[in-house]
Length: 81
Image 1 (cartoon, rainbow, N blue to C red):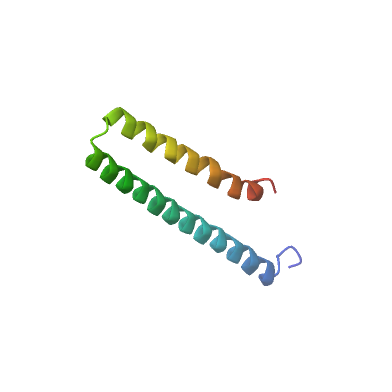
Image 2: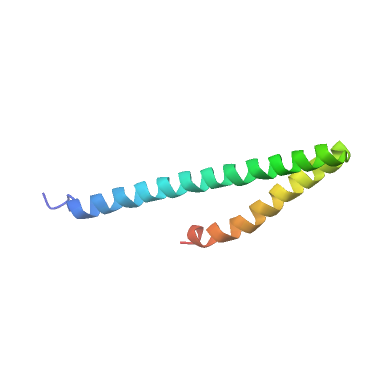
């Protein structure tokens, strides 16, 4: 059976797939942690100071947008391949 791929290339692809899944899961957990801490920090600050709700949402979404813009550049090199 000359058309079969060697086992080493199959296991290599499986390891790459598993590595990609684990990397994605780790990134998702880090993103969730960072954004949760950002929401908690802003909530505590705005409850303590009594600033308006519209400012809370502006700072909240602005901070998340900045986080996404910064971290998207880190993963951008992987997608070009």
